[in-house]
Length: 47
Image 1 (tube, rainbow, N blue to C red):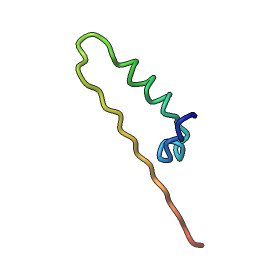
Image 2 (cartoon, helix red, strand yellow):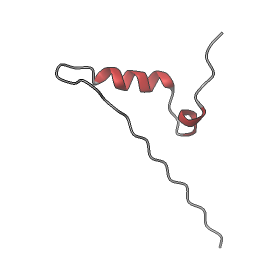
Image 3 (cartoon, rainbow, N blue to C red):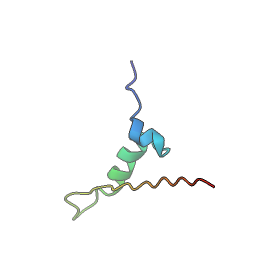
């Protein structure tokens, strides 16, 4: 049975596979650790 999608990633249009791929890209020589930071902004207005 496939894993359930991550709700936080789904909200911003990402999949866990895409995040894992991105972290895999930074697995290069001389890189010990890598972090991904996500920022989201929601704005509402009443006219």
